[in-house]
Image 1 (cartoon, rainbow over the protein chains, first blue to last red):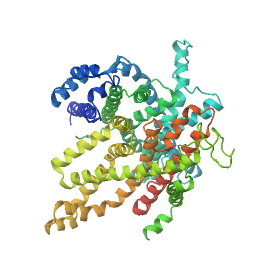
Image 2 (image 1 turned 90 degrees about the horizontal axis):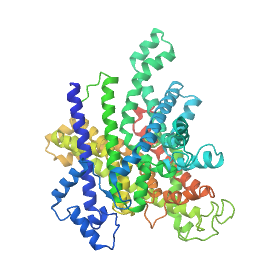
Image 3 (image 1 turned 90 degrees about the vertical axis):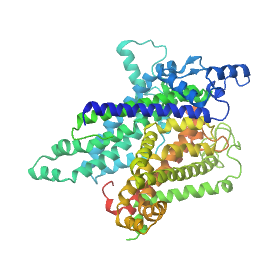
Image 4 (image 1 turned 180 degrees about the horizontal axis):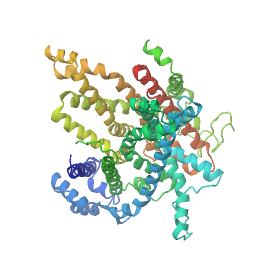
Amino acid sequence: MKTLEFLIQRLAKAVMVVIGVVILNFLLIQLAPGDPAAVLAGEAGAGDEQFIAQLRAQFGLDQPLYVQLLSYLKNVIAGDLGFSYRNHVPVADLILERLPATLLLTGSAFVFSLVLGITLGVIAARRRGSIGDSVIMTGALVFYATPLFWVALMAVLVFSIHLDWLPPFDMETVGAGYTGWARVLDIAHHLILPAVTLGLFFTAVYTRLTRASMLEVMNLDFVKTARAKGVPRGRIIRRHVLRNAVLPVFTFASVQAGQLVGGAVLTETVFAWPGIGRLMFDALLQRDYPVLLGVFLVTATVVVAINLVTDLLYRIVDPRIEATG
Amino acid sequence: MSFFRRYAQNVGALVGLAILVVVIIVAAAAPILYPVSPWQGIGDPLLGPFEDSAFPLGTDMLGRDIAAGLAYGARVSLLIGVISTAVAVLIGVSLGAVAGYYGGRVDDLLMRFTEFFQTIPAFAMAVVLVAIFSPTITSITLAIAVVSWPPVARLVRGEFLSLRSREFVQAAIVIGQTGPRIMLTQILPNAISPIIVTASLMVATAILTESSLSFLGLGDRNMMSWGFMIGAARTMLREAWWLSVFPGVAILVTVLAINLIGEGLNDAMNPHLRGRKG
């Protein structure tokens, strides 16, 4: 398949998913118990009949359902995600302002977990059956079973409260007024705990996956050939095994992008990280449904974009892949 | 070797089973062990662990017994974990079986649908669902089921796709059995072991999701749960570590036990795969 054709196909698929989420959001507003206008208003004017009536007219809730859906879709495509009556700000503005913080956090956590996970997986597979292998795999098993938010709280307890090494809240020191590199360092200092605690669960996943994948490739004939030729062990691992074993890990990591973004809701809540996850939590507390649905749509869009980029990168990394539908 | 023998060979799986049995017993006996509601303060507030022998795990800011909360929380975790998984398996098996057996356009359509649900961020969707339909034990269970069925559907579809062309299925078609009957009585029993393994691991994930939801305040207001206890104790972390440590350990141990059981089942049911993952 030609690259352009492939690109168009994947793009169409991504757009379909996003439209699907928009329709899902629309249905949720309709299905929610109570008046859709009240839902959209975040039950702000619970007692104010006039306000609700005005909203009903504004949202066109007296129109047939498909007309409502079309106008809803049109609004979203135009970048209008609704209005947060709690904050008196358009939802899109709220989210855009918070998005960079979330991308920084999830991006760092993703890189951290992928690098550490693959490294640990390779070490475990290389020394299969050794004490090191057991320690790594037990650790992976434990972190795979630990709730994200609890790891975050325990990290705060140990590293912030008891040891006082790392800051437990916020993205930068409030009122410090750092600029340039000092600010970058300050943010990095604040980033360590949230990124590591968000990444640990995924580190466990990637460790297990890398190890299993490595062991599978190590049994293949071409590795035996390499060994018979007398290629040094370290070189076999690096050049022959790892290169082939790492692809399934990447595929899985891309599929898991959604989980990582979802996990950010919990991590950001614990660390008061000013991203869209924290925004979602605040929206929950305030019953601010337009914000809630907006964040959901944006996270889904981010995930679709990540999957699209991975699909494209794949064709560059591994030309053997003739991706299909 | 029999299935039970093979399972018993795996030490981790046995430990997991033992832990789960203890958790189930505690959950079942909660009203006997702790007759007073876990919501009721019955001791001095913020007693540390082992400070008062009546409250070995301490009390919270309202004097509620942490140990009682853990026992009642086990009920919620296990209940939601098992029921939401059952619902998810039901959805996944139905869609996957139809897609894999009939193939063609039906398969295409159903797999698009599955892919859609697999792409959108599961936890964010669960949060939105529970928030909009207001948190009750039913809405939480259904929300977790709705976000966790896609892997089952894909798995079942794959199994059905490969089993459909086998001779015993062809024979059933020739003697005139209907599609649904073949799916239920011929193919499904042959595809059951990977479904059981996946389902057992899904219970663990469902418990984690439930705890995360109730941590965010999306738990059933009438039921004590581990995630809620941690969420409520969050602001007291500096003053009273035990409020959040013990419920977290309870989640960790339960989920770990179920994962170990799942892996044990996997090894016991697919002996030819042994050593590939382990």
